[in-house]
Image (cartoon, rainbow, N blue to C red):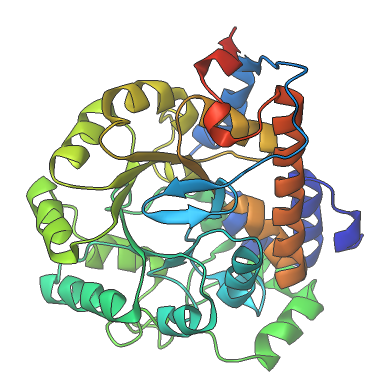
Length: 381
């Protein structure tokens, strides 16, 4: 199976499964507890149907959107995700290059494996920095200042990860950074010598956003301990309001799910929120973002940009979210599996397929621009 044989999310996932050691594949593919919310994220889109219009003259389709002060050529962006060079040695460089080619936004994680400075210098497309709130307030201020000096377009504070989720697939294999694999996990690495060769023959694995603050590689700190020991569970709305003032630009909260929290985000000056349950990786049993989308848009859609992520596997999923009022939609596993399968070529193929699906879907819906999608475009069962 090659990347050219991949025509949808499930194909990319299967190719990634064939090429990655089991513990790494399961790190991407897995979620918290019984993974109920992970499954619900995609299933939620099946609860409503698109209602197409015909004979609307759809020779040309405009997929562009304005979101968080950025002009995107398509309403889908690459959400910030951690550890990308672990999946493929090109890592964030591949994702940034593909996003730039297709005129959309990409995110750099605090746990990213390429520096925000390198990516900002190399790629002109809009760039998000995903930020975790640490107990060390000086560290928080230093990281925000660094992002500002780099020219980051959007600050995105993740608010649903004040402690790590219970990801039992990782516990079964012993997966963590640095590696602490059990015997079964080590055997699965041995079965994928091509991945191992790529890992050891390319640049040393590192997390440059945090390397001056946290020693991951030396064994002093694991990813799990980072979440439980360095992040601050006492973070509150006053802390975030101070960050919004200090940043003084496009500021987005990622992980908001309730109307009450959306209203508070608007009240403290956030310019956007991402409805998200972290891909089902934090609180299992949480609502899907798509299930919450309409009521949150109705409450705050005129005050800030409402975005969503979670479970998006098709262009029609994106169209449904846009019809309910989302300004854009983030994808994570949708580009991580193709990244793992084929690096930049994989991510470009995934984004190309998404753009083709969106253009086809818009034409079949009788819409020439995203603004023409509305609640009238949907019926819930």
